[in-house]
Length: 451
Image 1 (cartoon, rainbow, N blue to C red):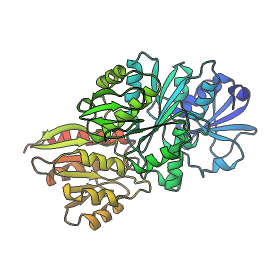
Image 2 (cartoon, rainbow, N blue to C red):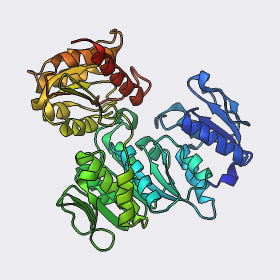
Image 3 (cartoon, one colour):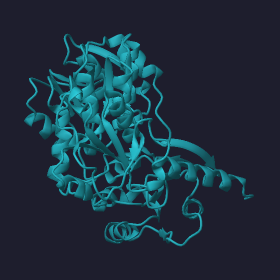
Image 4 (tube, helix red, strand yellow):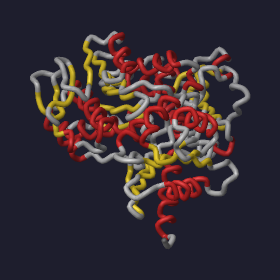
């Protein structure tokens, strides 16, 4: 749809979060008649000038378009009202396409590693002298990035956003990995993977080929140029690792980019993210020196394998961003020695059996929190029956404080207490960041208790 078609049209923005309010501002600017709704009416404050608050129960007469927040499922009642429904990122694509020089979209998706990869990519682009910005699911709405006039966008897109954005064709896109997540939203693994595959519709498609599902999506992609990233020695057309160096064998002559030991966050997930970001940057013409400089200056965000303290010889690591089993498995694998694992929350339909079975031999103990405790407890009983387990029940005051105290009681010097929940946080916390802050606060309180 062309933005000028919305001038004077009635448009509903369903959701008053960051992306919804950004969409509302852009639509008012176009000249649309904008109504904003939200399932929590108290959020309908400080709306953009020209927008009005509405009800979730019914659309205003003559509504031509609904711009939904990404969390609304494909079977939401709003999709059955005979009005087109798109996401804020789709609106951003329309706005960009209408410009004389549309911005280049470099899209990052995957079950895990999206935010780190997007941040690395933006750093590389800027190191190459480009006016680039990280946007999308990273916290800065794509609509705002387009309206600001940035010519290059490093775009993190979730499967939800991709589902609601059928027109986006990135200049280059990457699928990092595909593991069970959000099955309650998509309904099946096939539907989840199909949403991720939309990142591979442009001229250059990139995927983490060490991941079987991502590799299969790359093989099936229509892109004329396909690039794999791997922790192994790369073949022609791939980026990988040779003798501890990140190497590009896909874009021109073989070149070394940087030492794997210099990548932060370290370990296999961090190196894979760096290779993926480098592939997108190289696809956009960024030189190897800028790739190296971007990685050198990059620092990961909070709550991603963040070491918060060492108390009595026990390390405490906050990986609250590990919101699904695939991420938690990578987190557990990256920790040396024995682990006391704090896990639990909302599993979103994912199974934890493989996760528990894979790491059972390294667990000193497990503390289980959150709504979906029973699934984790059952998996531990099946695959790690000898591992001590402590359950923090829903009625406990300060669930994270209780979890940290119980984990500390199980740990021995040399162990690591790891918060890698394998689950979403919204049952007990506002988001993963609040959960991580609660963990750090509980660890700090533990340090103040005399031995």
